Amino acid sequence: MPVFLSLLTFLFGGLISAVYANEMPPMPGNRYDIGGHRLHIQCMGEGEPTTIIDAGLGDDSFDWQSILQQSAQITRTCIYDRAGYGWSDYGPRPRNSRRIAYELGLLLEQANIPPPYLLVGHSFGGFNLRLFAASHPDDIAGLILVDSSHEMQYERLNIKLPPPRKGRRNIIIIAKQTAATSNSQKPQILRDHAYRTAGQEIAALYESARQVRLFGSIPTIPLIVISRGKTEWAGNKDAQYREKIWIELQQDLTRLSPISQHLFANNSGHDIPKQQPEIILEAISNATNLARTMSAP
Image 1 (cartoon, one colour):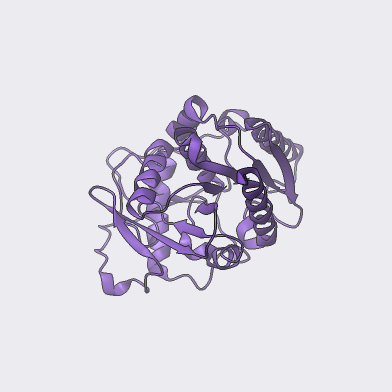
Image 2 (cartoon, helix red, strand yellow):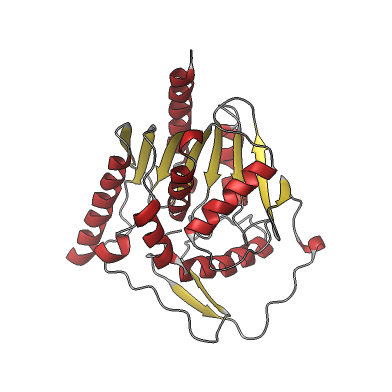
C-alpha cells in the first residue's frame, strides 16, 4: 500500500509476543538462509525468463497467490517475502531498498534461481527492483512497475512522513485499508508481521528514495509502467493537483528505458494487484514473449 495514503499510527503497549512456528499457516514455498536470517520464496511454472515479484509495502506473498498461479501458466514465476513479511525472518535494520535489493540477490543465489529475470514491482517494490536491476544489468529481461513509487514523490507531493519517536520502537505505521481491498482470508499473524515490518520500511523511506535517485538507473530493457486509472485523492482542487502530479511522476518512470510503454488500469486505484490483476498478467505475458523473441538466435 502507498505510504502517502491516509497514514494511521498505532501505539502498542507492552512487548510484541514471541511467534511460534505452530502459529503460522502452512508455508507454501521454501526458506533459505542468506546469512543470519532466512527469506521465503515460492516458485511455480516453467520457462524463461523467470518472473520475480516484489509486493507493495504492507503486502506479502499471501496477497499475490492468484497472480502467481496464473502467471505460472505463462512462465516460471516466483513471489518472495521481504525480511519480516510472510514466512521470512525479520532482517537487520535499516530496512531500506538497497539492503532489500542486496538480500534478493542472495536469496536467488541460495535458491538456485538463475537469470534471466522479469521483474514485477508494485508500489514500494518498484524501488527495490530498480536497484536490483541496476546492480544486475546483464541478468534482467524486463521490468514491470505497477503504480510504482517515484524517488521524487515526497518532494513533489510535499509528503511529510511522521518520524519515529525516540525510544519508542513499538510505533507501527500502516496505510489505510478499506474492506474492498483488504484480504479477509489472510491469517492475523501474517497481518501482524506486515504491520511491524511496514513501520520499519517506512522509517527508511527517505533513505530508500535517495538510494534510488543515486543508483536506480536501469539497463536498456523492455519496461512496462502500469498506473492507476482511478484517483486516490478526491475532493478539492489540492487533491486533484496531487493526483495530477502522481501521474506526471508515473510518466517520468517510462523514461527509465527507451523501450517502454505506459498502461493505465482504468478500473483500479493504487491496489491494482487486487482490483485489476488481469492487466498485470497481460503485461507479464507481453514482456515474456518479447524477452523470448529478443533472446532467440
